[in-house]
Structure formats: C-alpha cells, structure tokens
Length: 500
Image (cartoon, rainbow, N blue to C red):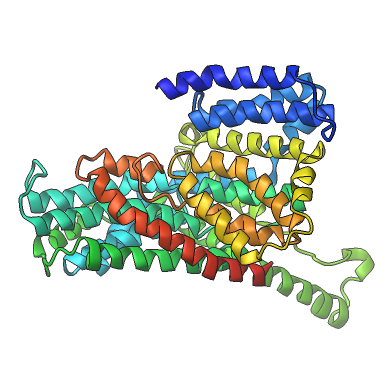
C-alpha cells in the first residue's frame, strides 16, 4: 500500500520535472516530452499506483496536449488488429466458462491420466496446461483450484491439515501443478496470456510483420511442453516425492465429479464446435490460403476458364487472418441459438460484462506509447547505441532473457513486456539482429515467474488457498526460473531464428 501511495505522487512528479528540464541536444523536444510521459507511465505500472488499464489511457490525454501527435494517431494503436484477436479469444473463453465446457475438459483429462497419486498430479498438470492455452491463466487457476482442493480434502480431512508428510507432498504437488501449468500453458499460443498478445501487437506495429497463430505455436509450444515435463518431474521425483502410489478415493472423486456434470447440453456442444473450428482455422490458415490460390488459378481459371485473372484479382484470393478468425468465432457464438423459440444464443451480450476490457485497453496504451517512442526517434537512438557492437548474439539473448525472468518476479509481466520490448527491439536492430530473435524469447521469459506469490496471478491464487508456503514455492520456482532461461536460449532462440 505504501509503494502505491509513493508511486501515485512520484509518477506525476517525474513527469513535471522532466518536462521542465531542457531537452538534451541529442533529443528533440517532442522526444523529451514522450520520455516524460514514459517515466510517468512506467512509475505507475511498476508501483501499480493506479489500475494498469487506467495508466494505459494516459497517452490519449498527453500525446495530443503535448503536441507530440494528434488524437487520431494517439488512439489508433488501441484498435490494433491484435486487440481484436484477443477480444475474440476472450469471447470463446467466456462461452466455455458460461456452459462449463472448460470444467468438463479439465475433469476428463484428470480422469484419463489419474490412476495413482502421481498420475492425478499429472492429470492436473495436463488439464491446466491445455485450458491455459485457450483461456487466461487466471481463469484457469480459479477453475482448477476447487477441483484440486476437493481431492486434497479427501486425503487430509475437512480442515485440510495432515501430519503425514507424503500426503502433504501430494497436496503440494497438485497445487504447484495448477499454478505452474497455468503459466506454462499460456506461453504456448499467441492468445494464451496477455504478454504474448502485447508482443504480437508490438512486432506488427514496429516491424509491420504479423506473428501468425501457427508460427507462435511452432516457436513456443516445444519450450512450453519441455517446461511442463521438467516441472512435473522436478516436483514429483525430486522436490516433493509423495510415495503414495495408487489412491482409489481420489480417482473415484474425479469420476463422481465428471458424472455430476451429466450429459453435454446444447450450449456446451455448440461452444465446443466453434472452439474446435477456430482452433483448426488458426492452425491451418496458411495451407487453406495456399489451397484456395491453387483452386482458383488451376481449376477455375486455367481448367474451367470460369474467371480471368482480371476478374478475380491477384492472389491471395482468401484474405484470412488470425484476427478475422477470432472475430468470426465470436460472432458465431452470438448467432448460434440454444433455444430458438426464446431467442437465446450461446453468448448473449450481457455475458460480455465479464470480459476483461481493461486488458484490451492495456494493450492499446502500451502500443500507443511504443508508437510515440518510435515516431519521435527514441527507439532509433537506443538502437544506435548498440550499432557496430561485437557482442555475441547468444550472449545478448541470454542476458535479456535472464533479466526478463527475474524482473517478472517483482512486477506485472504485462507491464514489463509493454515497457521492455521496444527497448529490446531497438537493441536488437542496433546489434544487427532480427528483433524477433530477441523479442519472442524475452516475452516468453516474462511469463516464467515461478518463485513468489506476487509474480503471477496463478501463484497468488494458489498461495491464497493456505496450503502452500512461500519457501515451498521458492524451492521449486527458483530452479524452474533457471531452467526456463536455459530452455529459452537453446530451444526458443534457435526456433525463432529459423522461423523468422
């Protein structure tokens, strides 16, 4: 609370001090004003003096007032296509939560894998991992925690206390499975966690390059899967071995929970169809566009001669982007009925009250600030400082990934990526590196805060259950932080170098 109060005053104070000081000779007056705004926003983001989305609105106020850009330019980044990608993803997640489809998926995964104590832990790892690829890590953790506590209470009694060390380790294993798999799963897809979307938006804005759903999946999923396997083995085989073997009671509990869901209702079925359809389109978008081009040119134009190139235009004939697919899926959820007579649909507009609109504003604010830093030459200035440097590319990636991992332990990973990525991109350009080779590893590293309760929302939610101590989280989290740095350098960096 004290930090917030300090930040509340310090942010505007820094802003005014920088504005009143004369701009250095190597910086234009407009760039100096943007530096003042950046100091203001970073202070509020780091101290969380104001909600992050509120801070993200500051560019709309100050960029026009300071004469840095007009209102149209300042607000344009808030409508970046990536914002709509995440909006569509949010709406799919809302439908899954509304009809309890996510709960059914989670319980069935746990049921399939859980035949003994470690198998049940693995089931929680896999279920949480899979859900977090598609819905927010916070929502995933909130869903999985009650299921986990039911299993834990079956073992330890209603008060959740036990003196049996093996049962304590089993409980720890499940809780750590949820908190870590929620963060790890979100790394795997571009819509899985807010930092990924911030990165995709920045890379599109700064370098005019679309990071497709499929390319992100290929770059990040191997790292994500490796982290999942390592975290599971580290917990059940090294740090917290429970030695319980087969545990019939917990397995029966999961079966009963699945049974209590009953048969899939119409809303669940139709949500599942839209979800699978969107996922397939995201993964098969490029082959689908290539097939459409071939079909038009080979079949319709050359063979059947139904059209000429002048009539249909140049390829691609199917202009399908990840953002369009996301909005198509969202609109479909509002159109598809669940009760035609009563005029009810899979999603109603009132359901969007639960949509995290603040996250969408946060993306826009970060992109607006980054755009101002770019247009006033600050990013170029940072890049120039590293021009003609002889630093090893591997060393640069290793250093930045390490900074990102440990920085995210003490500040919001969304704010961190928003602030840090333009600097990282400029450094990469100055060093003659492809910015993607640095920006994507740094973004994934920002989701790897495993040590402290305040590092990520999943950590905080699970810690609040009262079944885990900070020292226990730090014991595993420290090694996962180190391993995430190593895997990022030796898996993500080479993959991104190849893909981009």
